[in-house]
Length: 310
Image 1 (cartoon, rainbow, N blue to C red):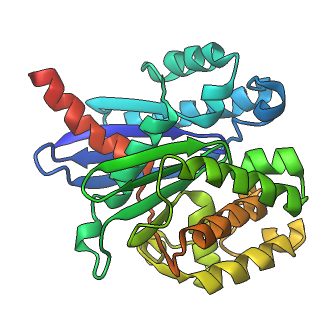
Image 2: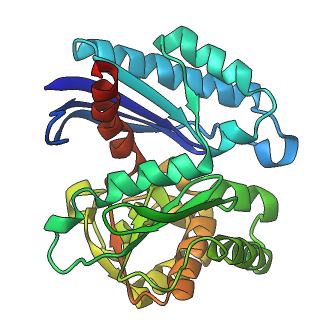
C-alpha cells in the first residue's frame, strides 16, 4: 500500500482525500475525505484576479490540510490540482507560491481537458460493478467556474471544458434566470462541437451541486454520501428540485437539512445548469457519483509512482 494525498482546489471549494492505495489494483482505502468552501473564484470572472481575502481563505484551508496529512503519518505522494479560477487569474503565481510554501508541493494548474480526464477516471472506475449501468458514459463535472464534459466507455473518447459554473453564473447574472439560461445554452452548444451530448447510454453527474440536488431529491434528513453515491434521480425530480431552489429565498435554502452554507447563494444557478444538461442530453435519469476528480487525482498517484520506477 502507498499512502497518497489528493487535493482538488476549485472555484468554490477545496477538498482533500488521504487514502491508502494499492498500486497494482488501483483500489483506494479512504482515511480522510473532507471539503471546505473557500470561494477562491470570488470576483475572478469580473476582475481576472484572485482576491486577497479569497487567497487567505484558501491558504487557511491548506494549512489545515497539511496538518491532517501529517496526522496520518504523511504521504508518499501528494498531488495538488487547481482548476478553473486558477486558470483564469492573472495573479495565479501568488496562489501557487502560497500553496508551495504551506504544503511543500508544486500546485498543478491543469487544463480543462486534463480536468475532464481526471474526473472521468474518478467517476467511472467503479461503474462496471453497478447494476444496470452501461457504457458509453457521458460524465459531467459541474463546478463553480466551469463544467467539464467527457464521453467514453473504458477510456476518454471526447472531452471539453466550458465556462459555466454555479459561482460564475451567479456573479454574472444574479437572479436573472433568463440570462443564465441563454449563457448555459451557448456553453452547451460549444461543448457539443467536441463532445456528442445525446449518444451516451448513461449520464453521470459529479460535484457539489449535483450531490446536493440529489440529496434534496432523495429527501435525506442529513447529507449521506453512501446514500447519494450511485443514486439515480429521474429528470422530473431534478426539474422539481430546481424549481424549488429557484423559487426559494436564501433563508429557505439555508434551512434545507443537506445544504452546505457555502452553497446557499449559488445552488440555484448550479441546479439550472444540471437541468439544462439533462434536457439537452435526452437522459431520463441521472446517475450521481460521490467519486470524482479527487479520486482521479489519487488514482493518478499509482500511475505516477510506476512511471518513476521505469
